[in-house]
Amino acid sequence: MMHKRHIRHSLLALSALTCLSGCSGAVALLGNMPSYEEGSSLVAPNQTTADVLAQQINARARTGLPIIIQDFWNNHAPQHMSALGRVLPEQISTRFIQLGYQVIQPRYIQNAPATMSNEISPESLLASQQMNPQRYNELVQGPHLILSGSFTKAVNKVKVHARITDSTTGIFVAAYDYELPITREVEELINPPQPKQ
Image (tube, rainbow, N blue to C red; front, side, top):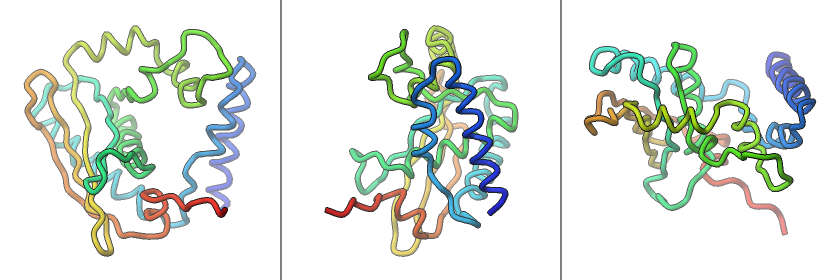
């Protein structure tokens, strides 16, 4: 519990420093961050997934290519984007970063604002400080790898499929299937609790 509290305090401190340069939405974003349960069943399987995919990439793809991260879709409701569909690739991409890969999330960069505005979402605001949109376009127009995937809710587990595609050939160069137990945390990431009327 202390470790979890320390991480959150560190994030809040980082947010405060960011806000000194005019960022008004960073604290709001941190307030909406997923709060993982103690002993979360999410992080370890997603780190393992990144490790397995990285081994396959190293054996089959050109090294040094950036990895574009896409949200995972729900096979039961492809038109509905859930928090789980964002959390899974984000945790996999965190491990990729630790392994030394260059990672890009278009969800943040594409809408990065050119100027400050009250209508800017906290995500876009933070993203605008992470990568210049012009640099993003250069990387995406060149050869790159794409992490994509999907998940399917079964009776007592979620089946996840993750894969890496080479943008120049369209060929899958890595893939991995794994399962997550359906805990309260996972259930709420798929279907957030509705506010009481």
